[in-house]
Length: 437
Image (cartoon, rainbow, N blue to C red; front, side, top):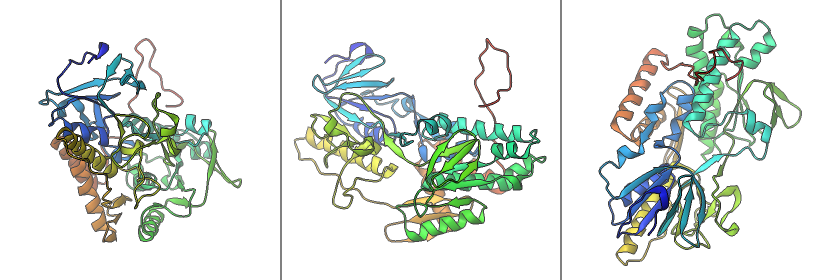
């Protein structure tokens, strides 16, 4: 079997190429590294990103390295695992080849765990000007923008111009939008008055705009209502049944004629599947997801699988596909690994059945909502549950320790120690303060 110039050695074991090092791809590679397969893990980054805590990086609550984990460190002792940092440009299912920026690679089995990206629903202007949070780089860009605008605000005399700098609009009332809104409201209440004493923080308005009639769609009515109550107590202005039509960098335009002045829009309104060239059109369904059967095999293609956010699978309890959350990705990876093992032993595979462990969201300190299969609760205990679930979901004891220390410090001091504006510098240019980040 050839590996072209990616430099993967030939091996007697079947080669499984996994594209994507997120929750799905990483868990699959980890399980299969203990089996009689050659595993090639391809990702454009050399680290795994813990996406549920991106918003805390953006809000200066955590340092990026605390929620990242080097891929090579996890597989240091797994001699059958090869990692390549590159981008997959195309798959050739007829020749069983993966095309990357480094070269081509043949596979026996291909697993696409390429995840999802921000969905701007075709609005190019919003895509250019709004701030998504699907990567740690985007979270850092947002952090820079928020902090730098406050630096500009304290020297801005004109009231209207200052409002554009300090007011923030969050679009999307799912868990990410709710958690960002809560974090910003707490920053306004506890942090900004200490850092920016010249600024009247009462002027700061935080808007959460949701196209539907409730927050946290998909969770219980109790969770939705409690999240709305928590945010209102924190001073967040919630606009339900409000669809954002445009954003020009100065104003957010809402269907019906309303507009909100703000230089910053945080876009958390939807996701769409990442794309890869070479799959048949009939394999792609709405939202850019790849249609798979109950074994996660891509429909219409041999020896190609898809797992995680990119996979669209129908089962009796989920006739419109599974929610695009980490638990689905992790469970699909584990089931697929077991099926590879069963196949190698000549045993029949077992279809995937999603075990819904529940959903949760936090709305600042001491406030969270948790929906478990048998119990629903909100408030302080829900917040403690949220903390521990996310803490122990992180990879690496060092990351868990650092995140725990940051959380404890923030809780008792009402402070965040990472309010740093860090931007790249071109050594061939004179350093200057840009008008925009």
